[in-house]
Image (cartoon, rainbow, N blue to C red; front, side, top):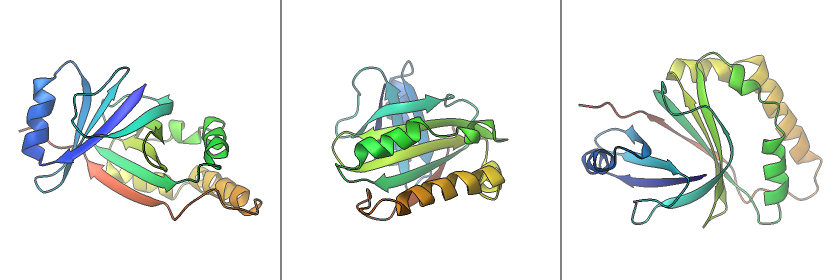
Length: 168
């Protein structure tokens, strides 16, 4: 499965989404800053997308109102270890109230992976961040990072969040 991301104005991206109603697309953002996500087994209709391969997946885009993208830059040498960790994760997030879906995205043309999570709303995400399962999973990852003499990361991770764009 592939996932493609493009940016633009909400009106332009909305027209693109409407032109291809059979495609699995999700419009995020507001009037000033919008993103369109296209998940497909084939190619994309976007001209210059950011390209990813979905290496782990749970759930679908339906019933989501809030999207969190954890952007994680990883060295070429660290990619196998990083992917192994995510493929063998404890999956506690999937049972959290308000959780809708996750996609672990391998970059095709860059070194920044994206952990894309979809939530029923922002409050569900914020509640998960204070949960015991969040603390355990992130402590586990931090512990693994410190046991390796060389970091697999090329820089700090960063979060981007979006609300699902409301249809007019």
